[in-house]
Amino acid sequence: MKPSAGVICAMALVTQTAVGATAPGVTINDKPTMAETQALKQAMGADYSDLQPFDVGHADLDDDHRPDLLARSDSTGGCGSAGCQTYAVLATSTGYARKSIRLATAGGKVFVLPSKHHGMHDLRFESGTYTFKWNGKEYQ
Image (cartoon, rainbow, N blue to C red; front, side, top):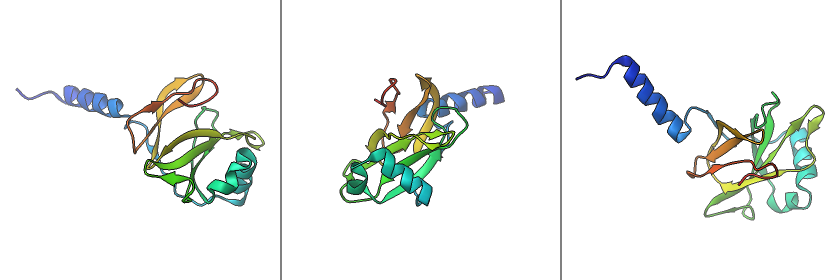
């Protein structure tokens, strides 16, 4: 018996949702602009110089229609066998937040999932299977 087109579409949707593939992955491999570099320096403080240079990407983590900055260290001090240290700096109406959010040590794309906790989208990294959830202060 051949499954109907509706059954095939439903199966594909369930499969995509299960792996988080419905959200396009954000590639973090652009060089930061001068404004983004300044935002990273300010938000990361003393950690910035130990972890620079950074590659960046953009995603709206809090649904405010502003592209938040995703930054991944590209230095030997910020990378190891599990990947590279990755951070977010939320966009504001006047630029970027003054404090960074540590995401994870990971590699590959960042998947911004449709599910949310405390106003922030859940995240999954291409290099892993764990879903990071915002607890109001940090991603865990």
